[in-house]
Length: 146
Image (cartoon, rainbow, N blue to C red; front, top):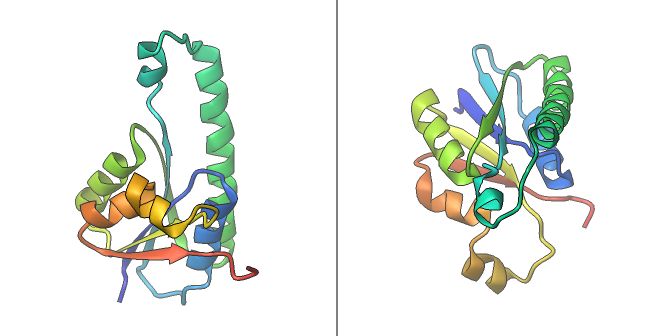
Protein backbone atom coordinates (compact mmCIF):
# COMPACT_ATOMS: atom_id res chain seq x y z
CA UNK A 1 0.00 0.00 0.00
CA UNK A 2 1.20 3.48 -0.82
CA UNK A 3 1.61 5.55 2.35
CA UNK A 4 3.61 8.50 0.97
CA UNK A 5 2.66 9.86 -2.42
CA UNK A 6 4.33 12.66 -4.35
CA UNK A 7 2.28 14.39 -7.05
CA UNK A 8 4.26 16.41 -9.62
CA UNK A 9 2.43 19.64 -10.41
CA UNK A 10 3.27 22.51 -12.74
CA UNK A 11 -0.15 23.99 -13.40
CA UNK A 12 -0.48 22.35 -16.82
CA UNK A 13 -3.59 20.38 -17.81
CA UNK A 14 -1.50 17.20 -17.57
CA UNK A 15 -0.40 17.92 -14.01
CA UNK A 16 -4.02 18.65 -13.09
CA UNK A 17 -4.78 15.13 -14.36
CA UNK A 18 -2.17 13.85 -11.89
CA UNK A 19 -3.96 15.68 -9.05
CA UNK A 20 -7.29 14.24 -10.23
CA UNK A 21 -5.77 10.75 -10.31
CA UNK A 22 -4.55 11.21 -6.74
CA UNK A 23 -8.01 12.36 -5.64
CA UNK A 24 -9.42 9.09 -7.01
CA UNK A 25 -7.31 7.09 -4.55
CA UNK A 26 -9.01 5.61 -1.54
CA UNK A 27 -8.47 7.58 1.63
CA UNK A 28 -6.25 5.70 4.04
CA UNK A 29 -5.49 6.78 7.57
CA UNK A 30 -1.95 8.10 7.83
CA UNK A 31 -1.44 8.51 4.06
CA UNK A 32 0.67 11.56 3.19
CA UNK A 33 0.29 13.46 -0.07
CA UNK A 34 3.17 15.71 -1.12
CA UNK A 35 2.26 18.10 -3.91
CA UNK A 36 5.41 19.50 -5.50
CA UNK A 37 5.89 22.23 -8.07
CA UNK A 38 9.40 22.75 -9.42
CA UNK A 39 10.27 26.12 -10.89
CA UNK A 40 13.08 25.90 -13.41
CA UNK A 41 16.31 27.51 -12.33
CA UNK A 42 16.64 30.82 -14.24
CA UNK A 43 20.43 30.48 -14.61
CA UNK A 44 20.22 28.97 -18.15
CA UNK A 45 18.55 32.20 -19.27
CA UNK A 46 21.32 34.21 -17.69
CA UNK A 47 23.94 32.07 -19.43
CA UNK A 48 22.20 32.65 -22.75
CA UNK A 49 22.56 36.38 -22.19
CA UNK A 50 18.93 36.98 -21.31
CA UNK A 51 18.25 38.92 -18.17
CA UNK A 52 15.35 37.67 -16.08
CA UNK A 53 14.32 40.46 -13.73
CA UNK A 54 13.63 39.55 -10.11
CA UNK A 55 10.04 40.92 -10.19
CA UNK A 56 9.20 38.56 -13.09
CA UNK A 57 10.53 35.60 -11.11
CA UNK A 58 8.54 36.71 -8.05
CA UNK A 59 5.35 36.95 -10.12
CA UNK A 60 5.93 33.43 -11.50
CA UNK A 61 6.58 32.13 -8.00
CA UNK A 62 3.43 33.71 -6.53
CA UNK A 63 1.30 32.52 -9.48
CA UNK A 64 2.57 28.96 -9.10
CA UNK A 65 2.08 29.06 -5.32
CA UNK A 66 -1.55 30.08 -5.88
CA UNK A 67 -2.05 27.21 -8.36
CA UNK A 68 -0.36 24.82 -5.96
CA UNK A 69 -2.59 25.94 -3.09
CA UNK A 70 -5.70 25.52 -5.26
CA UNK A 71 -4.68 21.96 -6.20
CA UNK A 72 -3.91 21.17 -2.54
CA UNK A 73 -7.33 22.49 -1.50
CA UNK A 74 -9.01 20.10 -3.95
CA UNK A 75 -7.21 17.16 -2.34
CA UNK A 76 -7.83 18.44 1.19
CA UNK A 77 -11.57 18.68 0.44
CA UNK A 78 -11.44 14.96 -0.30
CA UNK A 79 -9.99 14.33 3.15
CA UNK A 80 -6.31 13.90 2.25
CA UNK A 81 -3.44 15.25 4.33
CA UNK A 82 -1.50 17.43 1.88
CA UNK A 83 1.88 19.14 2.14
CA UNK A 84 2.88 21.55 -0.63
CA UNK A 85 6.41 22.13 -1.84
CA UNK A 86 7.50 24.93 -4.19
CA UNK A 87 11.07 24.16 -5.21
CA UNK A 88 13.66 25.62 -7.60
CA UNK A 89 15.78 23.52 -9.95
CA UNK A 90 15.45 20.83 -12.58
CA UNK A 91 12.27 18.77 -12.10
CA UNK A 92 13.87 15.32 -12.36
CA UNK A 93 16.64 16.22 -9.92
CA UNK A 94 14.30 17.81 -7.38
CA UNK A 95 11.68 15.05 -7.58
CA UNK A 96 14.23 12.24 -7.27
CA UNK A 97 15.82 13.96 -4.25
CA UNK A 98 12.41 14.36 -2.62
CA UNK A 99 11.56 10.71 -3.25
CA UNK A 100 14.67 9.70 -1.33
CA UNK A 101 14.44 12.24 1.48
CA UNK A 102 10.70 11.80 2.14
CA UNK A 103 10.59 8.02 1.63
CA UNK A 104 8.00 8.30 -1.16
CA UNK A 105 6.24 5.07 -2.24
CA UNK A 106 4.46 6.41 -5.34
CA UNK A 107 5.02 9.31 -7.73
CA UNK A 108 2.09 10.51 -9.83
CA UNK A 109 2.81 12.53 -12.98
CA UNK A 110 0.63 13.77 -15.79
CA UNK A 111 1.70 13.04 -19.32
CA UNK A 112 1.20 14.90 -22.59
CA UNK A 113 0.48 12.53 -25.45
CA UNK A 114 0.88 15.06 -28.20
CA UNK A 115 4.24 13.73 -29.40
CA UNK A 116 4.87 10.49 -31.19
CA UNK A 117 5.86 7.65 -28.88
CA UNK A 118 9.35 7.20 -30.37
CA UNK A 119 10.15 10.90 -30.05
CA UNK A 120 9.13 10.99 -26.39
CA UNK A 121 11.55 8.21 -25.47
CA UNK A 122 14.32 9.32 -27.83
CA UNK A 123 14.42 12.92 -26.63
CA UNK A 124 13.64 12.09 -23.03
CA UNK A 125 10.64 13.71 -21.43
CA UNK A 126 10.61 14.46 -17.73
CA UNK A 127 8.48 11.41 -16.96
CA UNK A 128 10.64 9.04 -19.00
CA UNK A 129 13.81 10.34 -17.32
CA UNK A 130 12.13 10.05 -13.94
CA UNK A 131 11.58 6.31 -14.49
CA UNK A 132 15.34 5.86 -14.54
CA UNK A 133 16.02 7.98 -11.47
CA UNK A 134 13.50 7.06 -8.77
CA UNK A 135 13.26 3.80 -6.88
CA UNK A 136 9.52 3.70 -6.32
CA UNK A 137 6.37 3.14 -8.34
CA UNK A 138 5.27 5.77 -10.84
CA UNK A 139 1.69 6.29 -11.93
CA UNK A 140 1.29 8.15 -15.22
CA UNK A 141 -2.07 9.94 -15.37
CA UNK A 142 -3.64 10.28 -18.78
CA UNK A 143 -6.68 11.99 -20.18
CA UNK A 144 -9.53 9.48 -20.11
CA UNK A 145 -11.53 11.61 -22.56
CA UNK A 146 -9.24 10.78 -25.47
